[in-house]
Length: 383
Ligand SMILES: Cc1cc2nc3c(=O)[nH]c(=O)nc-3n(C[C@H](O)[C@H](O)[C@H](O)COP(=O)(O)OP(=O)(O)OC[C@H]3O[C@@H](n4cnc5c(N)ncnc54)[C@H](O)[C@@H]3O)c2cc1C
Image 1 (cartoon, rainbow, N blue to C red):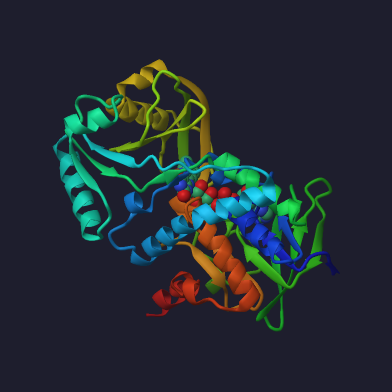
Image 2: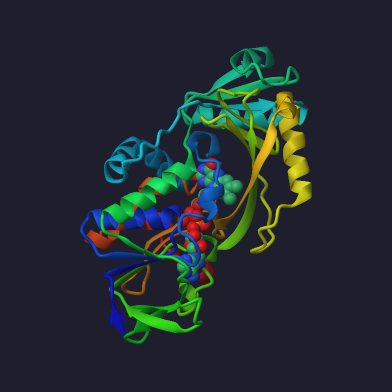
């Protein structure tokens, strides 16, 4: 078996690229193996929202803490990224307006507000007229809204391009069209020894010896052979679709959320309208019913979208674990690490994932990642 790298990262999505960049920055010899083109996984389809306060789930305390910490790390992370890539990725703090149009929405909005108020997030309750004053493109039918001022968003494609450039500038190697088919083990399955890669042209497989592996294969992370069943992350694909509109005539200044839809304005005159959530396996086709629902819901809240044009349909598979939180850090198999299952929050969680997974590989310190260990699924089976 040939050795060409110290660390192999399986998957060149936003998480694999960012983790690879951090490891390469620390002087490690890293190769990312990507089954298609690096950067073009779920991250390429994403809306780029960095919104832990809005996304806070009622029973996901640890995920919320991780998300808030990741957002805090963003400014420094983007500064380093610019130094290493030459690409300036700017995150915008526009805040979000969560809007209600009817009685059901209003009840949900009240619960949304109360929970965040309890957590001492600086949320503001607005009457419909106040919301329309803040964002004149909103429908006059908006009855109330909550303003979440601390939400950010960024251009996720520019972010991913910068990560790819920074990784290679720091000496990292990307092998594209090189799917990893199997993780190889030794010492009675207690330690990794290498990986098996398929050459798509010749259909031959080759084995490569490595010291460490980071599994960052997004929605496909449960599909790679060789991992003992107990340690396969229970990840499934959840398809998401976003409509990318050319919206010069409808320039929103905040992220807008309402029942079944969000609208995210981007600097280049684009407006992202998302997103569907579909449990359809690995099928990535654009479903007409989903397009209709997104447009109808968007029109109800921002009627001016009828003046926009459809530029692109963005499709991606969110990697969802059983509990919708990621699996991060070492596995019980020596040399195998996880950075997978980020579901709806992979862009938000990129800095903390890359920094902490890198830290755990270099130092063995896994304190911060403990709540996200693969072993949490083991205990739920045995109890
Ligand atoms: C419509 C939509 C909107 C979203 N909006 C947001 C948002 O606003 N904010 C936010 O924080 N998150 C958002 N997300 C979620 C975010 O995009 C994901 O959580 C994130 O992209 C996960 O990153 P990843 O690198 O794990 O997976 P991916 O980006 O999917 O990358 C995984 C990579 O692994 C490769 N791969 C798979 N199997 C193998 C193999 N065997 N060998 C080699 N390579 C392999 C794939 O080809 C792929 O390139 C959104 C997602 C979608 C779909």
